[in-house]
Length: 226
Image (cartoon, rainbow, N blue to C red):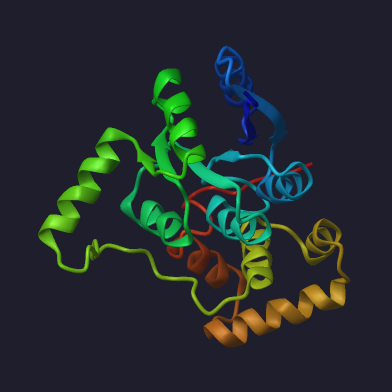
């Protein structure tokens, strides 16, 4: 029987290596690639077409929510499992809405992670016990299942605008953003201006606050990529 192919997307090398070692012990699971940024996760998914992508929410260059959106659009047959230190309802809601197959907290055991990968591969959903309980309670207590505590939505922004916004919020200059996305500085400036006009925000600090409120980056986090 062919093994379940998995792409690991985690920006912390030690964590990623630990996950790979755990999964390599499973005879029916094969790690076929590793990504250190959200954008790399999207690119490798297109190249490798893994059965399952295990993806962190807090990824540099392209956050896990937007990476999930792009992965599922580019490779509809691939299943996305979120593995994150953050189990906030807002993040869970966003990725479920996009079609993620599950959401696990990083304290999850290797046994549970392996089970989640197998369930996702079979077309089922899988959540850490605590998240599963919260989802069940919310469904029972609210006809709409809404948490009432969602972050400000980034709806209305294109995928490219979300990418630009994240890079701005991460402190990237226009030149760095242009190099990362393979576009001209003039195009970056145009996107930045469109963002400010669309969001009615007129400075970088305001865009950063919006990115945090929308869950595009974590509060207090400023990534630095050499």
